[in-house]
Length: 183
Image 1 (cartoon, rainbow, N blue to C red):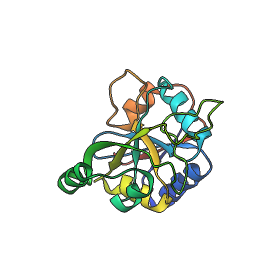
Image 2: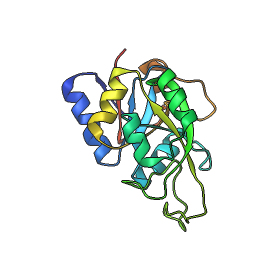
Image 3: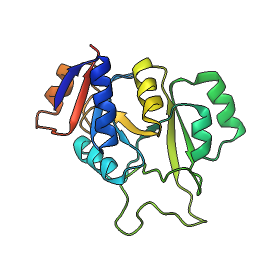
């Protein structure tokens, strides 16, 4: 794992890692997050492997704005009310995915048989977040697509709040993982 202090250069490198299908660890308004490109099934599978999370347990998704969210999910009045009250911020809305969207999203790694495709009658949901943390928000805005994100910890272990805790949990080498250390 590469640990870099948060600088404009390391931020650009993090965007390159994401675009290349890698995994990054970044600060959020709650704890450090483990993120990857939500439209890249191999990156999502890699992130699940890093976290040791069961493949049938979806994680939340980071979007840049409500406008971007509406391109991917079926928005409703209750979501609008909650969003106006609590977003951006540490709230996750669970909403059904649209069948037609700018990109296929992978809340979990695809099964070999489905490759992310859905039938008209199948309803899949996704956890939606819009971060109030300036670094997380800038990442998703500059990346241009939603990010798959979850707390940067091994599944079943406590959340991590500093790079030392992350390194202790992820003691094995994570070669394509970049940690943006903001303290």
